[in-house]
Length: 121
Length: 110
Image (cartoon, rainbow over all chains, first blue to last red):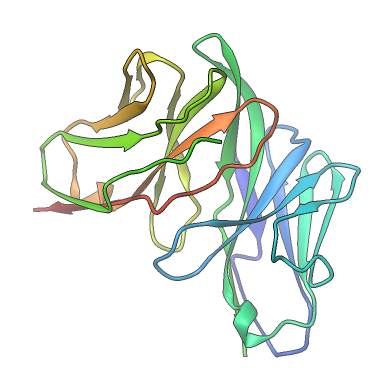
């Protein structure tokens, strides 16, 4: 299957600083990437849809000025958590879609990165 | 996209076959079904995807009845390392985002 990487895998920062997380599709091009966050023992929550060359689409309740998303190329999307606070501490996961076929139907299979553990002190 | 419903948890002994069923009553004609596996502190890992009937790969089988209102992930001869959360998701062509439900927490016991 396709490979998606994230960097860094974990980051600890002080309250008020900004943190950038990179998401790369290594062996395919992805016009669309997605960003999720996950709290302990909870399911993944979609934060935003990142489209190459255009503005991201944010889910309701996600502050676009706090979570800046840039998708400058077909293999790279970045999420910047600005002025981070302890409540932003979470596991952030990105995914990228690769088109395929299933039962004669075109599908968009999402492949996920390994995640980034953000801890804000 | 169709909402999915799965059992919250399942237990199994090593070596047994495990079947996890997912309900998606409102699945649309062009929707497909994908299953993911997630270990703690890791991103979800793609297991299998299908549209109808049966799909098999090296790790699992996916059974989808004719009405497509449910699907069953079958894991043959599970081992301790298969202990994880399994998510069933319904997707649609066009880079639509996936909506995760609570998933099924599978615990494999020696």
